[in-house]
Image 1 (cartoon, rainbow, N blue to C red):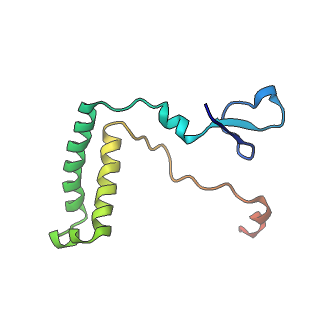
Image 2 (cartoon, one colour):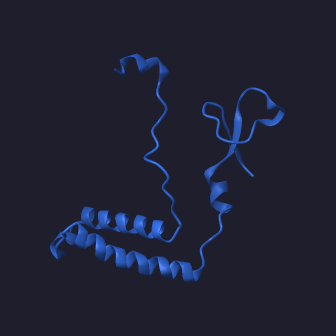
Image 3 (cartoon, rainbow, N blue to C red):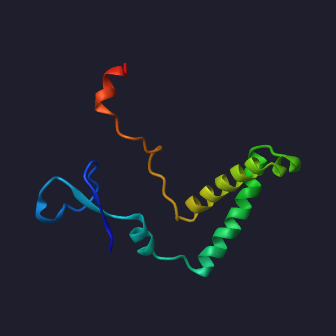
Length: 112
């Protein structure tokens, strides 16, 4: 297993020996390889759900067939439908708003 030293923002597991205040966290490829892949039936349900939701998103956004000729519009529809499908099937959980970077304490005096 590959580990990355993550000293600035502690996330998990204490460092060996407990010294230095640093922590070790698994790198993203370890998390990816440790996941449980979805089954063929789950994949088929996801595809069917996403197709239904694409139609719903198109009607919600009030899009016309000529609007779907634009790549950015198609991408927005795809992203929205994919996110909704993943959430509805329980593959994606959103528990709060976007993650924001920590405040830079040296520049906090500029915030009023």
